[in-house]
Amino acid sequence: MLARLLLVIAITFSCLTVSTAGHLDLPADENKEDPGFLGDLAEMRGEELASYLFSLIQPLANTISTCLWLEDDALQVTEGLRVIVFAPHPDDESLAAGGLMNQVVAQGGAVRVVFVTNGDGYREALQQQLGDEPGSSQDFIEYGKQRREEALQAMCELGIPPEDIIFLGFPDGGIDDLLKDHWSRLTPFTSPHTRFSSVGYTGAFSRWAAYAGVNLKDEIARIIDESCPDWIILPDPRDYHPDHCATGIFVLEALRQLNQQRELALDNLEILTYLVHFKDYPTSPDWLQEVRKAGLFMSTTGSGTLASTQWLELPLTDDDLESKERALSAHQSQHQILGGFFKIFLTDQEIFGRLDPAQVLTIPQEYALSFKQPNS
Ligand SMILES: [Zn+2]
Image (cartoon, rainbow, N blue to C red; front, side, top):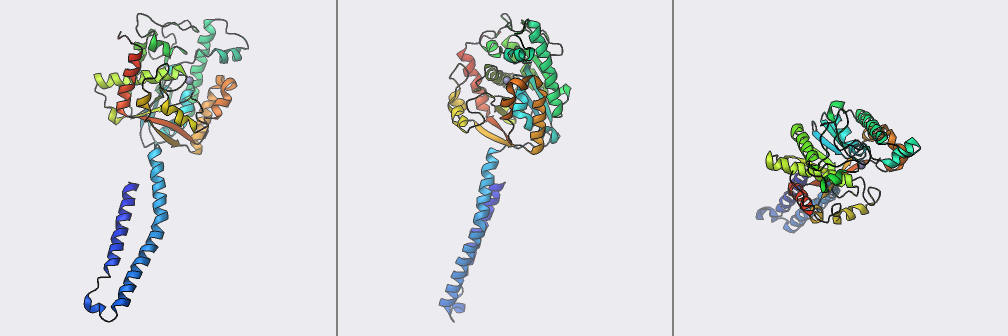
């Protein structure tokens, strides 16, 4: 819209200049009395007018072009959006997209948050909390239940009701294992922390589902299919944390499946990735150069495809920032160990990478092939 406005102003201005200059072609009889003077005057007035208008329009043009640049790189939350946010662990959703979720709710939209794990495998944090080594798998299970409650409170701070919050209950620290070595239901993964080899938490999306990659992919596909989202927010496949990288791949796999089997139109979807664990992110601008050449976790495939990712800023208001801070505060079990890390995400913007449909369809295939993934 602004580009068109600028074009119209430019065209109007050039027409005006030509039109003013056109006065030079006065009828011969009118020029007879003092043609040189009138001609010079007309030309001079035209040039002066042109110069004057240029001086008026130049700052405006500069302002408009700056706005255009920002607009191209800024994300805008519009009214009534339906958004799904995928979080590998409780707290990732608020770190990466707390402000975005606050804006969606404020604009009358709906947010569903999908927690892939309950964060039950964070041994160091649990050890700090207990003041001792966790003694049994039950300690980890209780920790998973605690983090679930914290996640519900965090989402309450952002105005997201419990019915829009989904806990899949898959193994913290094992999402990449499901992708690489435990894809099939015949060979489920066993969590070294909880000792679960299927979803053991009451209230999980699909209790007793085996810890198999194919199950996680199918559950994600079902949630997307049922939710009819406008936007999907997922961890970037280049994130250094294996659970984050693998969660991103699982969401892309699910999208590819829906595209092929249910004819999901990717063109109508805004698919946005986020980073949490990455060199220099988000404190130094160097991360942008790094992420452009980074491959996927344990694989260099996909780096070329992802290099062209467009990174967009979502400016946050004071209200967004306060809500985000309250949401992060609700993740109490993480404060002692991650309080400083949380702070670096409390800035006046959030950053998302936009994937186009071709990238969505290409990355999972390349990644899956690199692991010779079975189909069952
Ligand atoms: Zn995480």
